Image (cartoon, rainbow, N blue to C red; front, top):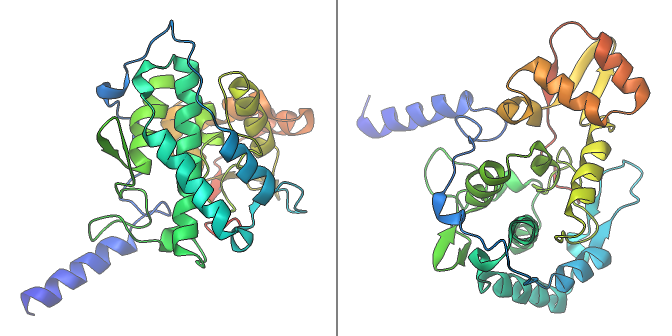
Length: 276
């Protein structure tokens, strides 16, 4: 067996054991200290009006599935340029001069708007995991590609989620805010996050996802959970029992009662189809 063939076979063998996330393991929350800087006394506000307008124009929030759907095919060239200008303004923002609440809204909106732009740049596509622009043989999707530059530092989507949002705020509701353009993901919110509405949107997002079958359901006595609760179990109490305790915080009374009585192990699944 020659060296090239052996290398290819090794790559294929590793890909066969990759989890659904497309990585060897789900990213851990790994703080990037450079982004801890903030100004508690700041009253500066970032204008997210353009992102609001885009969501109102193209996000379908009444789809019968209960999953918010993005009308990617309908986005006009003019609105694509507006989205790009909005992202450019975010890149030019001195984020370290903002207070913590404003920063949280900034990073969530940047992640979500950037994800939509990535899909539009490669549309049509059946799944975001098919947008293989990340460097390296064993990566899948766009999450490790350097897509923006903020305060002179190049950032990936994974940097924003796993090195900034998760470790700085240490709030499991972050998982209900960032959207990966997939049916299995928590809904993209219909308005931009702001310092004023973030707490409400985070809780609304948690309740909507936990009480939707793609998040949590009991199927013939078997508990079926979104793979998010397996990939990021460390954020939801560190164990399956911790996950269930988290779910009960947001579950409607009938589901909360079922979760309280449940004994056994959960099954996990995720739908990576594009949220189109």
